[in-house]
View 1 (tube, one colour):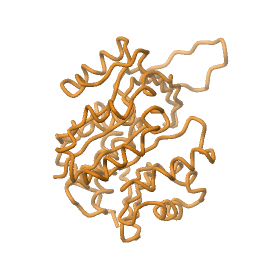
View 2 (cartoon, rainbow, N blue to C red):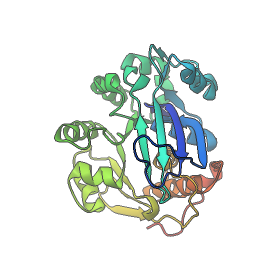
View 3 (cartoon, one colour):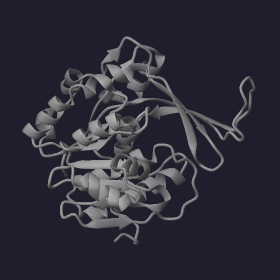
View 4 (cartoon, rainbow, N blue to C red):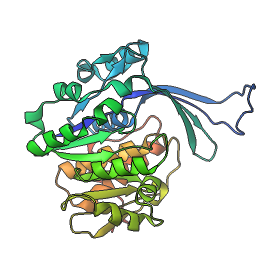
Length: 311
């Protein structure tokens, strides 16, 4: 199996809800559920790899408060090398709604302080050669983004393939954000976007058309994946052929971080050199189990058990 690593945003998530209707200013409502947990795209993906029993490396940072200490403890030995930024840890408060949607309020916090020298000091480059690095939280890690060219040069020099999940930009898909993302895509082997991100970034209506448009911006042997929630996922590989996987019908318990779980499972299958169709089916399968089990349950066997309706 090829080696795996993740770089980017690890923060604290506080989940509350469901809230309906949205409260008016100056009032208070009671909700039935709360949970404080590890969050952030990089954090969620790393925990998925851990749950799948897969070895990986992680480069992240934390703030200098009690939340930062807690995050480092949650990741054990892996978290001991994380630098501590002299500021509060980034906190996301997620308000869930009865229809399964959610609204997030996020502080800037420590994420913007993560730098390329920090990242490089945490990764064993030699062990990563020939593998995949998942790069997350691009619109939250400002200092690191300023050195993305150095990161991509390092990956190219060491035969490391970069898989990109930018996340949603706080300012929306402005032309400046589109231009930045397109530039990053030109250096990435794999893109992992959700349906709305894909269509907005490509400025297309249909996800498949948008995927092909973004694939044209990437290196010749690249892969683009579109995550579509209950509709499953699609991907366009190096041969420019479209493959799809439908999602099974499940009783949804918690969808937060489902896309990050998909990323981890997809890349785990890709690191085993499985066919692209199998990889997206594995991503859909593990993400579907994650959103329908409390606490979330999956293991290494789930990478081999995929939906039958992949094509």
